[in-house]
Length: 262
Image (spheres, rainbow, N blue to C red):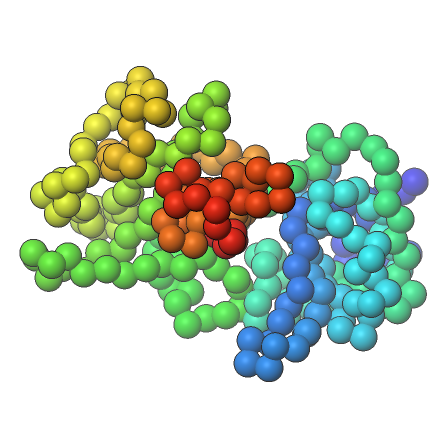
C-alpha cells in the first residue's frame, strides 16, 4: 500500500491514504446543552507525527462502532482542511475530516512504531498566553496565593512513579521558573508537613513506609513517561488512584468508591 505520513497530507492532493493509530478518542459535547457536537480522535503515524481528526455529528453513528483507542487503521477518502476556530487538540495547520464515504479498515500489524499517546509541550510563558484562548485545548494553570507573603504563584501537583514500585505514588510540588529567573516557592515553611528531600533519597524509600507522607524537591524534568496515559480512575475523596477488585473500585484509604476520571 502507498500510505502518506500525516506530515505529507495536503488539502490539494487526491486519493490520499494513511495508516494511523488512534491515541485518544472522545465525544465533543456542548456543555450548556449536553448535546453531541462531533466525534474526535488524535491520530499518530509511524514517524511519530500526530493530527486531530473529527467526524461530524451526522456521521458519528456510522463510524463510532468501527473505532477504538489504541487500534491501527487504514483510512482513505477523507478531507484535509484548515484547523477549526477552536478546540484543536494538536498544534499545526491542518485537520482531517471524515465524510460520509470515508473508508476505514482496522489493521493487525506491529503497533510499536505508532505512539500510544501524544503530548505537545509548550514553554511555560506560552502556556500563560493561552489563558482565555480556546484555539488549542491546553492543560490548566492553577493560581494560588501564599497566606504568609500574599505573593501569587503558579502551582501544580504532579506524581512521580519509580518503575518497579507498582502503583504507589509519591506526591511532589514543582516550582516554575519564569524567563526572569524568579522562583515560585512552596517549601516546608509554607507547610510543615512537607519534607524536603532529593530525588535520590526518594528512590530509597519503600512505598509501605511513606504512606500519606508529603515531600518537596527541586528538580529538572528531562523526559516524560507517557505509558500511563492521560487520565486515571481516582478516589472521589482523596483523588488518589483506585484499584479494581471484581466489579468494584477500592481506595486504599477510603474503601469502596465510585471512580472519578482524573
